[in-house]
Image (tube, rainbow over all chains, first blue to last red; front, side, top):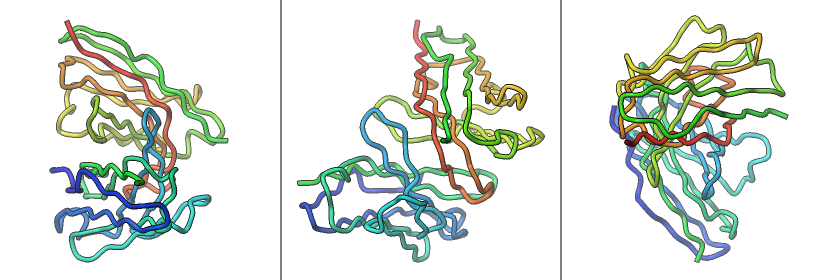
Length: 110
Length: 120
């Protein structure tokens, strides 16, 4: 099972929006509405910020939103803040492989 | 408050073995499926293994199948990962993680991780 494809980096100025794509196949992203997104700050554990494509766990700001079309999911961070600077990973359920992760995207707040 | 604390990491020689533990608190351990996820230095996340809430079903990535064994002890609220025949490619921070909804690709809570280094 290959990793999902994400761009290595993305950036935006404070207050702007950034969108991170996550491309898979019909066996993972396209086959299930089970895409999750995780935020990871340096030296810290990942944190779930989106599940089931577009749902937010309690406590996650609504500046974070998720979407999926076909084999590509995306995470949008609106109103960028300094604390949003982190690595972001998508993940998809893929049947026999319950967790397939993306390659990760480093978001820089300019 | 959900808490998960990994331990057991360290330096091991190629071909060696190590057992990781993940001590949990703040939730009913026996009610939740658990996973191990690893992250090689400077690299992305890789799912390693999962176990059902009751322990009767286990799952492994192809990269560790036949070498690693996941288990759990509900009397101790602890998750384990027995790692055998270790290679340099197993060097990583190993996280334990809890899922509230199995089969949805969702890992709700994570421990802080324990570093495993395989080197001679």
